[in-house]
Image (cartoon, rainbow, N blue to C red; front, side):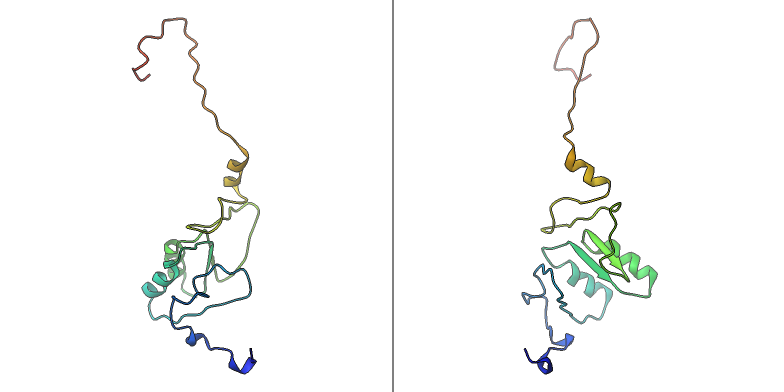
Amino acid sequence: MDQNKLRHPSDCPSQDLRVVDTELFGPVVAAIRFKTEAEVLALANDTKHGLAAGIFTRDGARAMRMSHAIKAGIVWVNTYRAISPIAEFGGMKHSGYGRESGFQAVYDYTRPKTVWINTSSEPLGSQFVAR
């Protein structure tokens, strides 16, 4: 594509475009203009995906509200792609398979089992009575 014909962010007219609602793993940005916090929150959550989200704002209260309300497995505020092996990572909705890293990852390597043992020599009694 000719560099002079690259589209301006305001040319991405709606959420219905395939590039907007496709989980792309590459250097692609689909920018949609918005006027209110409620509008951008609705746009952010109107997808079947939920791996990650990024918020850029100088308003700390807005960052907290939005990071809580956006349905994504990880939300970065004023940064992007910061990760750590001690913090869990994984998506929501149709994004990701479980969790990686962090405490939650331990469950991928365990198979819990419950064992009940009666150590009494007394007769068991009715097996239909909860103990």
